[in-house]
Image 1: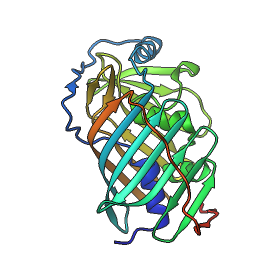
Image 2: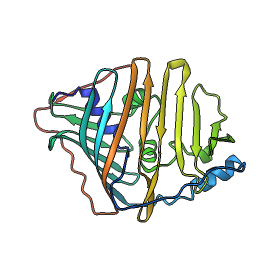
Image 3: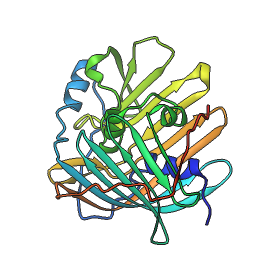
Amino acid sequence: MRCSVKILFAMALLQLVMVSCKSKAAVVKEGKAKETMGADSIIAQHYLNNKNFKTLYIKADAHYQDENRSQNVNAEIKIKKDQTILISIRVLGITMAKALITPAEVKYYEKINGQYFEGDYSLLSRWLGTDLDFSKMQNLLIGQAIDDLRQGSFTSSIEETLYKLIDNASNGTSKTYYFESGKSMVKKQIISQETQGRSVQIVYPNYSQFNPIDLPTAIFIDAQQPKGKVTIEVDYKAVSVDEDLSFPYSVPEGYERIFINEP
């Protein structure tokens, strides 16, 4: 089963998303927006949600699809809050790729071609259609708004029983966020750069409580680029919080370093 370098890398970094959690976590009841609420109140309530943890450990089945192919893999994800994300991608029980993400850099290696990459977030940002860094990646995974909404200015409204926030900044990037009304948990994030033909939509259908934090039980990512569309889904089989975790990463001997300048 062959898989391109780009697909393995994209899956290792993007397929940290939930489709239907099969643990015994309690489903979080969501509210429907009926009364107008100001943007500041929605944002303040969003950041009251408990996202305090030391580590997260996740086992998942993942699916990647673009216009040319689709791929199913298993993923093991380890997160040390604000410091490290380690992803192992496996096919038929064999480790095919590993990715180590830190605030400073992104590293990965893949077994098929015996290659490895070390660099910044620019490549992943181009693939996903929005500028990324470690904090934004972590926020995406735990169900927080990718950007720090407390630093911006927004207009609020109600759309289809969800609170909708539109970023008032005019810098060539359009950002829209949707929240349920119970805890202002984010339900959808849309970021687009129309002049560049890039956009990404991140959807969180449900949440469950993994003591002591609430996490998404489903995330769907649709990324649109001039070269085509990428869809990513991941089924979380198990989630544990605050276990003692190790983050081993080393490039196997003899692998070739690659430099990717793909637009």
